[in-house]
Image (cartoon, rainbow, N blue to C red; front, side, top):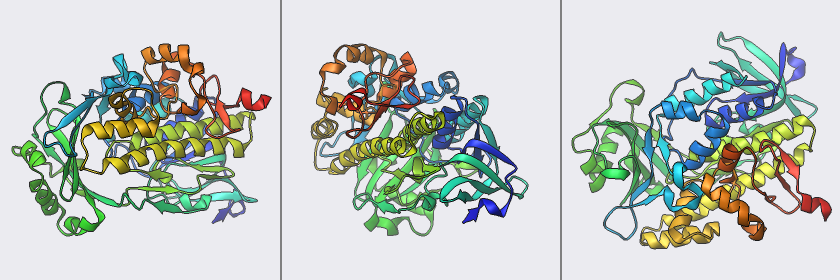
Amino acid sequence: MSSTGDAVAAESFDVIVVGGGPAGSSAATFVAMQGHRVLLLEKESFPRHQIGESLLPSTVHGICALLDVSEELHAAGFTKKHGGTFRWGSSSEPWSFDFALSEKFAGPTSYAYQVERMKFDQLLLENARRKGVVVRERCAVRDVLEDEGRVCGVRYLDADGAEQHTRARFVVDASGNQSRLQGRVGGRRHYSEFFQNIALYGYFEGGRRAPGPHSGNITCVAFESGWFWYIPLTDTLTSVGAVVRKECADRVRGEREEALAQLIAECPLVSEYLAEAERVTDGPYGEVRVRKDYSYLRDVFWRPGMTLVGDAVGFIDPLFSSGVHMATFGALLAARSINSVLRGDLGEEECFAEYEARYRREYQTFHDFLVSFYDVTRDERAYFSEARRVTRDSASDAGAFAGLVGGGASDDAVLISDSYQDQRKKDLRQRSREIHREGHRIQMQAAFGEPADDAPAVQGGLVVAGDGMHWARDAESARA
C-alpha cells in the first residue's frame, strides 16, 4: 500500500471518485454541485459497453432530475417502458404490470427507459464535466494513499502511462464489481447463498415486439434452467440474456454462442420472439458475454477518508433491473455524507453510518422479495401480496408490487410523483414513522426542491436536510 511519503502530490481535490459509471458520475456530480472540487478517474475511454440496460422510474424521474439531465435523457430517444411483462409462476400465459399501478409513480412519471448503457453512461459522465467535475479517462488507479491510517488520495497511471499521486479529503471507490480498491476499507464480500446465478447474454437485430402499450417492456421468462431477460433497446435491437442457476453452470461453458442458442431453444417464448432475428456479430454488441458473481454485499462500506458505492458495495440480482437504481441511490446517500462532513456539519462516522443503514435497508427489501419471487409455483397475485408484506406499503397488492419494482420502496422523497407528494404532504405526519422508506423521496426532492418529512434509518440516526444533499440531526432525537 502506498503512503504519501513515496512522492510529493502535485495537486489535490476535495474528493476523488474512481470509476465513471452511473454510481461514480452521480456521486461526483452531487458533490461538485455543492461547490467542492472533484476529480473523477476512469480507466477506460467512454463510450464503452456495460450490462444493465433497463432503468426504473425512481432513477429516471428522481436521480436524473436531481443531476439535471432530464432533457438530455429525453432527447436521447431511448425506448420508453411503462412496466414489465413476465411469463413466470404458475400461469401459463404472460402477465404484465404497469408502474402507474403505484401512486408513487402515477401520472407523468409512470415510465422509465430501456437504455444503451454506452450512451446513458456517456450522458452522465458528460454531465459531470458540465457540473465542474474534472474527468480524466484512461487513468488506472493502482492504490490509495494513506496518512496515519486515513485514506488521503490515490496513486494512478495517467493516459500517458506516467504515475501520479493526487491527494483528497475523500476517495470514493465506484470502480465496479471487479474493484481492486474495495479491500482497502477492510472487511470482505459476502455472497448470497440463494442467488448464485450466472448470466450469458448477447444482442439481436429484428426480434419481435410485444403489442400495444407493452412493446417497450422488459420481458422476463422462466424456463427449466433459470430465466431469460428480453430488453427492447431500439425498434430493432434487443438485449437477450439467460440467467442460469449454479447447478446449470456447465451449460454456459465452452462455445458461448452455441450455449446461448441452445438455451434459447429451450425457452419457447424467447425462441418465438427471436424466430426471425439475427444475433449481432460485430461492433460493441458483437460478443456473447458471461457475467458471474451476481449477488453479494460487503460487510464494511467505508473507513476514514474512503467509501464504496455502486457495485463495489454490492449487487442483488438482475431480475427487477435494480442495478442502476441501487448504484445511483447509493451514490446520493454517500454524497450526502461527504457533503455534510466537508461542510463541517456532522461527524464522519455518523454520516456514513446513515448511508450504510439506508443502503442495507433498500438492499434487503429487494433481496427478501426476490427470494419469494423465485418460487415459480405461485401466481402473480401471490407475488403482489408478498410485495406488500415486504415493503409494508399501504397501497393495494398490485400497487405495492409496482412501487417496489419501480424503485420506490425506500420512500426517499425525490423518487415519487408530484400527485403522490401532494397527498403525502397531507397525511405523512399522521402515518407511523416506522413505515417511512428512503427511496421515493428522491423524486419529490427533484420535483419540488425540498424533501418531505424524513425519519432516521436507525434510532438516533440522521435525517435528510432541507436541501436534500446533506444530512441533519433529527429534531425528535435531539429533544430526547
